[in-house]
Image (cartoon, rainbow, N blue to C red):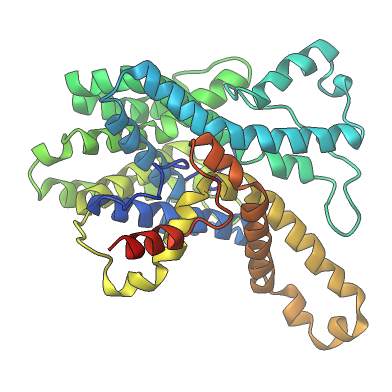
Length: 396
């Protein structure tokens, strides 16, 4: 399982043209920080980043909260609406990515049987399992490496997991109302069963899907529990007392089972599930009520709005942007003056990070309209909320 994050922000929040409810501002901030951390982690690869802020657990919790709020309407309508908002940006990515792979020589025999190749292409349309992609390709010299298809498809595990969570949400919500804490902790029990060998399943597709649920299912359900008011029923001192114990257990297990650079929490699902559960529980417990942005956050209002408005686009394309930025930056080694006088600059990841975000901004401008169409709203090139604010100012 590759996490972005992705080793994914809720990636498709409600339309941002309207003024966000007071409490939603806190969730918007969490989503923006989670998305930025995803990009930062995928470039830097620092193992401690998912410990400092477990983005994927946070994003699944925010998505679960929104899903529970939406389920006040008929479940079929809610699920259909969620899929409508999620899938068109994926289809755009698939149309361009699969076309590029085919043009570079990817053929039906890639998976060993042409019939399976054509059947599995359907996962680019409805990602109930991992979509197929080419292992190695010629790439584009100086721009894209031979592993560009794998980088393109890497974040899609989150889309698959999100889709299953959406489909299961009506059932999960009913279970949450009937047996709240058993429902919240059941994914953790499943993660333990996988980790300690009590449950073994054949194949790859079903185990990977269940692993995603066992790792982050508790976070999704906690988000639903927060929206349903379940967390408010417990004494205020309980969460700050319990979360350090759960987080400590998760960190201890990670440290004793290979946690190190290049082998982090994402590779230890049981530890990830405990650490994410504790972090999400604490963040939801804090959940401040802001009548307006705190002074320190006011300058970031438009940036936070933009990251929330284009979360799906940023998430889907950021891996490819990192690859292109790294490949382009490596070309500077060909210049002797830089190689001899500024090797420290060429080895630094910070210029690559800046170039990556420049390319991400280009993707927002080029592909972001798919999110607006999916949400049935007027397309905007740069939806940072400034247009809505000007309209509100004129209407006064």
